[in-house]
Amino acid sequence: MAKDYFNVLKKKAENKGVKLSTLIIVMGSVSEEVVRKVSTDVMVIH
Image (cartoon, rainbow, N blue to C red; front, top):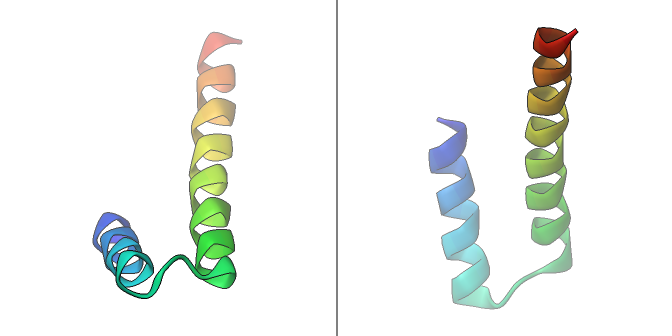
């Protein structure tokens, strides 16, 4: 579901040219997932 939402945002960004707000939202979502994954990996390691 999150992936579909990301693809929709990506299509909109491609159609209209990248809007700063959309880019910020996408980057925020991506970094949030990365942080979650990294902290999960760290918990597994420790």
